[in-house]
Length: 71
Image 1 (cartoon, one colour):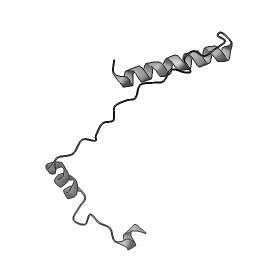
Image 2 (cartoon, rainbow, N blue to C red; image 1 turned 90 degrees about the vertical axis):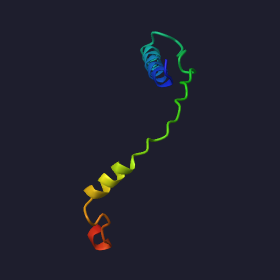
Image 3 (cartoon, rainbow, N blue to C red; image 1 turned 60 degrees about the horizontal axis):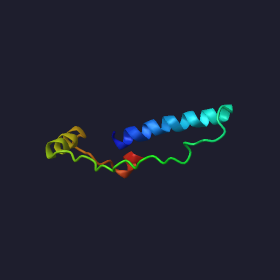
């Protein structure tokens, strides 16, 4: 199972145990000490040169606003 799926499942189990404790069905919250796995950090995906050029063309002939236009 992927770390994010495990973390999501664990969050549900911890929520259930908190509810059971609140309702008085159980005396201790056994899931309180369980820590979720650390999800791997991903790098952002770079956009291609063609996409950058397309974005610059879409911004119009004057992409930077003057200070008067910003105010």
